[in-house]
Image 1 (tube, rainbow, N blue to C red):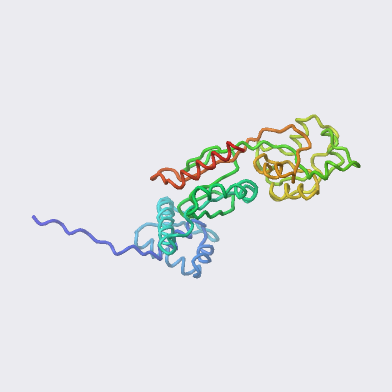
Image 2: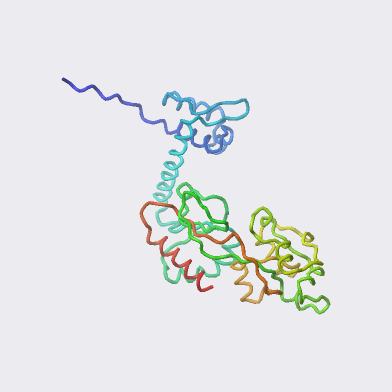
Length: 307
């Protein structure tokens, strides 16, 4: 008896898959159109073409929004990984020697901890090109082409392999000139009422990260208004303002270590508070081990231990 012919399917519509993946990622045909340099109508047409090809509905279309169906969610999850791998492969084919090791970390950590030490890694790996990207958002290792992410947070990085690198205790820091000014005493915490307090806006939204209220309460200071003083968008800006002599900031230990050693900052008081956040090394979970990534992570551990 002859075998039944195998039903063939036309080749997958790649343009339609691209349009769907972009729309699914942003839940917006308009945003997808901007990413792909086409019109929203073109994205909608491609998505309808893909739905016809698959024979399933991928989006629930509302008046001003779209929502993925269960089938759409399943397809979007797979396509995100596949297109990420494809983009990475194409990048490497175009410039195979570029960006051998790509690191993602927050700007303050890159400037204050990583950059001053990176020459020691280059000494042992002189032929390896390291690229530092700054940012603190969730990392898609495949899509973004990131090899290692260094994050400041409480841990719990789902879908990734994470290792706590350093604790991040918090204490006041200021310029030496500020503490040396004979016109203003700075010998006990309550003396801070005579000085400008510099605030990090991001600390307020992070449970367990000490702010001025927590530090003053822990040290028994009762005469200081913990809310006064300018607020900066990042700890990096607050610490730089402190180094410039504009006030006193709460420094995070690894981020002020270099400035303390160089005398650019000093600790006017010793008490330091524990921090629920720390610095973490985060990398892709699973897959084959990469000797270069392993070496960089080991170097980070050694540098953190020596510090």
